[in-house]
Length: 362
Image (tube, rainbow, N blue to C red; front, side):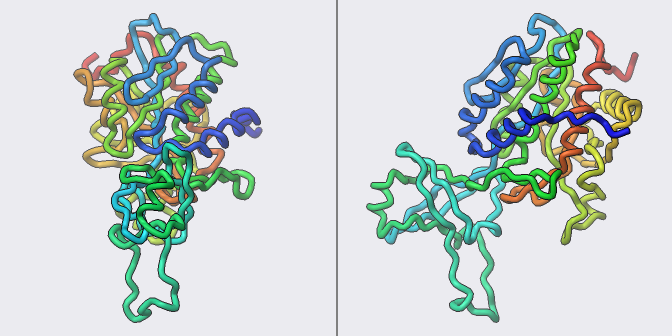
């Protein structure tokens, strides 16, 4: 018998609006306000910090604290240099991909509002076909239709303005979600849905649950580093995205075999506390939730690392959502994987007991 769908129309409407709102690293607050408004009926209170991380808290008076976490920021660009003839040159804000930039429309965020621009590129007719020059960070540029530097500045554009892509959410072939910034606003969406399910199913947890949407992951896990010191949790279950390695030009011997539609990915890495991970996998097996495994060597490269090594050590685990075309404007995930990540976190939370130490020595 098919499992009941977790995502409803309200969920999808929220997801679409949440993704379509720009939230580049360092400028996440509008998206965070929108996320908090959706989460408000399902939590008891909110915590926010100086840089914009938002946390919805259930059972805030409990001494034992469990975090479920995603990150809110998306990759972007900064204006770095304005030429005399009015062209803009950029630097990265996070891991923005220079190779996808040519011919993309952009939004430049200024105090006067959004200024539209395009990443220009020389026409094929004018290029040396025997020696094609690829897009590089030092040769991609943005044209906003200004005749010179003075006109650029009159439009409100200056060095330091942040630049995002306007590409919006859509659904491909009924069950593939497509958008920029699925990495990792899908995480914020999925943990919000966990809170919704707990509320709607009238589940009472024996601990405090901290539904955490961190900022600044894309430039070094910074938001998680800050908020873990504020919360001081005993347990952290982090969700992020990982690569679907079945598309062309990916080496499975290096990246492993992971496939969209085959279930959430459970991480094996030094930062992942093994007893907590075992609880997650055993819960998934009991509840018939499909999952895959991934080995991540020294670091996970996610907020898991920030939580695990904080406050004298926090039992942490990572559940990842398989994703195609990471750090492009056409990131793709499978609806069933999204629902199974939500199920996996929800069912695991119901297994955690107040005071669980996850110690190897008990």
